[in-house]
Image (tube, rainbow, N blue to C red):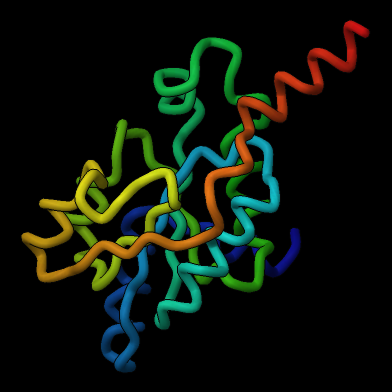
Length: 163
């Protein structure tokens, strides 16, 4: 297995790693998403998170969570493969797969200094905003405008196959 797969951690291992990073004076930037079909919008989002400074932890929705959010035909790629793709990126320091509908539980476990969300949100409408602030963190909006969508990309593929 490639070395980058070591960045895919269990929740327990992630809590330990976060403690070690903090002891070394680093802060935690939490990001999350389905990352079903990796595209340039994801890369720009994760790069924007890294530019905030600190260790970037990416929480990847589990297969069951993606089905709940996106529908029965998703994800198209299994959670372990999605996690591996994200772990291979230079801007990512750790990856964890989570089954919950949002990252509130992870926020309670990790107390990230920053929760980075994409530009389809504003700082005021991030679902977990109150949880982040309750633990002394802040929300940051990063990445390029929401001009890239996995759903739209998959739709285009479907159109191409049927034309």
